[in-house]
Length: 346
Ligand SMILES: [Mn+2]
Image 1: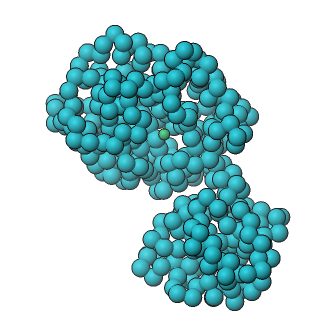
Image 2 (image 1 turned 90 degrees about the vertical axis):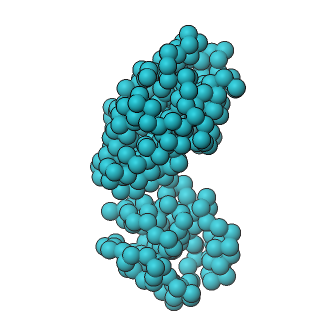
């Protein structure tokens, strides 16, 4: 299901052989499994998966399964003695691996297939969407379960909160898509704050977290106010929420992602200097993947794209705000992370 469209691309482009190796998450995309070590060799008509003997034996219909041991490249070379063009994923391949490939296939021209991989991965199938929806439900549910814990003061530090969220997601059959960001007070002014043992007091609490269900990620950020928020906090939150909702409403087919971001920057007016990151990112087997919101990439909203919309405002040494949803565009714009978005007051 996954390999065939890529094989058609290889055939069309005259690429005799492409090699994708773990830790490139593309291997999980193609095989729907995770391996500690694996190499996937794909030609237009066949595919072979070399897997570490320490990994569970994979059940694969679309490719033959071989063991990954010393000399696997020689084995591969016997099957494909003289590829003219060798496809690689530049973003993910190590220089050491590339050098080994070049030594084995000295006459092959090296071609990057990363762009096609990104394009394929960004167009989610019905099954991928089902998994992402499930990941989003588990994520939202973890937040619901957290609130009474906070009220009862059973969680007292950023780390306690992260641990509780992660436990909840695992209890519901999911894994953690990425290390949760739990940032209290001025810590939230740092967008990628590292969750610490900071105790929770009166102030704003930022939660950026997500589950991964059967290899597919969710990503959500919500803000909580412990105690009554100040006037400034309330006003800033209302401002940001309006901007985020406006951005979601303005998603439409064929629209450049960079234009969505431009709209948000325009909306923020003089406050745009507090918004110090991009508006969002695609997600799937990785929590950050295509589509990209960057101007140079010129990517546009298309059917079955899944991406985040997450404007933020950061006031150094004071507080920080971010509101993030995972969005599916399937002709209509659907917010998959359904947790309420009013500032949650505890
Ligand atoms: Mn995100």
